Length: 193
Image 1: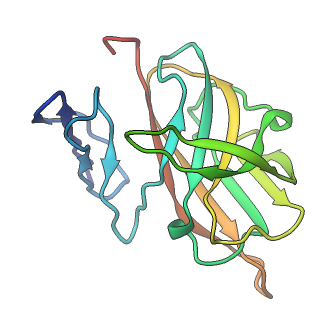
Image 2: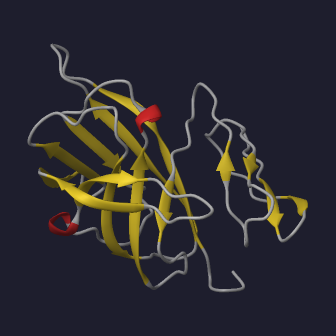
């Protein structure tokens, strides 16, 4: 099924553009943005097979260093987390150093304030699946009533769209990870990207 993107430019007024990007294997979703926001920003509608998660990256330009904040808001999860897996796309041609990955409590920003992730949650971080899965083991279950973020620096790969997925395991008898959602990150060629 093709994914058709629609963007809204927030430059004083809203002008919808039909995106010419087609991705296969994902359900059809519509991208949105609030009018008045500078630049282009994607906000995806959620459906039963795909849930877009909030994120912040400090630099979207390819071949530059950036800080990624992959956020799980309290509304994105219903239970505590004893293990969090973040899958990294196989074509994300950059290395994430597990020693520089932190799980943190976050205050989610918006149009008037930036997202801040200050309080570190003690956790062990390991790489699995040839470096394409971050396995995060908090020292104690992370309660669902606060926003948390997976924060790390990374050297951005080439331009394109990259889908990171969140899978979490809750306390209980069944050691299975459930899908929480995805962070779809776009890396551009530059300012005019």
